[in-house]
Amino acid sequence: MQKAVLITGCSSGIGLVAAQDLRNRGYRVLAACRKMQDIENLRQLGFETIELDLDDKQSVARAAAEVLTLTGNRLYGLFNNAGYGVYGPLHTVSREQFEQQFSSNLFGTHQLTQLLLPAMLAHGEGRIIQTSSVMGLVSTPGRGAYAASKYALEAWSDTLRMELHGTGIQVSLIEPGPLSSNFTQNVNQSQADKPVNNPGIAQRFTLKPEAVLPKLHHALESRQARLRYPVTLVAHALSILKRLLPGRLLDKLLRGNS
Image (cartoon, rainbow, N blue to C red; front, side):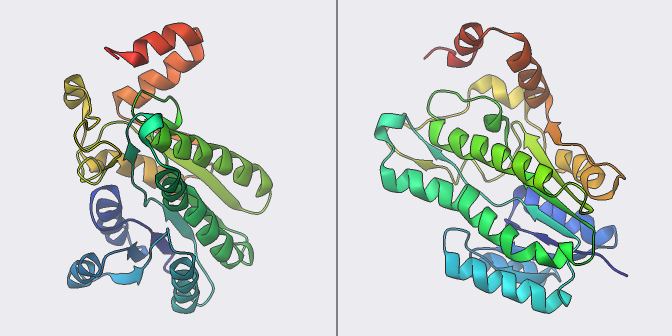
């Protein structure tokens, strides 16, 4: 039986390459995104599409109901990939911007997972995978709101994994470092005249979104999925440095010139 996987945030980047790759591997891919133009583009590529705005609880409820109908209440994989970033010094980020950051990066993911989980539990198998970030491991100046949402996603995923122990459903986090995608262009800057940009050195370690695919394959298909999958040298290095370095020394490293 063809396994059904829902992928959110399929308009570009990780979501799009994951959708194309998993379809080629024989999965039934349900590709979700927010904008109608992107949905039409996905349809032109031959995908089954789901309209989903994680910042709108009615949209999440409709999307979940559509997924359950299309799959006959049997879903194998949920790849919670969609999200965006609010950048800027914390004192310049409004409450509304902070709320929307968490709404899209955590609350919508929680609601969607909660609504789809019964379609996995009933069959005693499934994989739930989140796209986190190196910013879920460390935070840097100007990225506090985004990092806070990813730190929260990491804690949520850890708890979900433990609560689902013994059910046949495994939960994993993918933690990318710098990837070449539309993410940076779509960042919501709290100070348009003083945007927070990635340091120039980051370009030397930037990989294509396809770098995520081997990790995604393992998370979906291995007998025992890993808890976390760092992607890029930056993510691997920072995950090690956070464990080894004293906090103030790590602060100095992450502050850079700020």
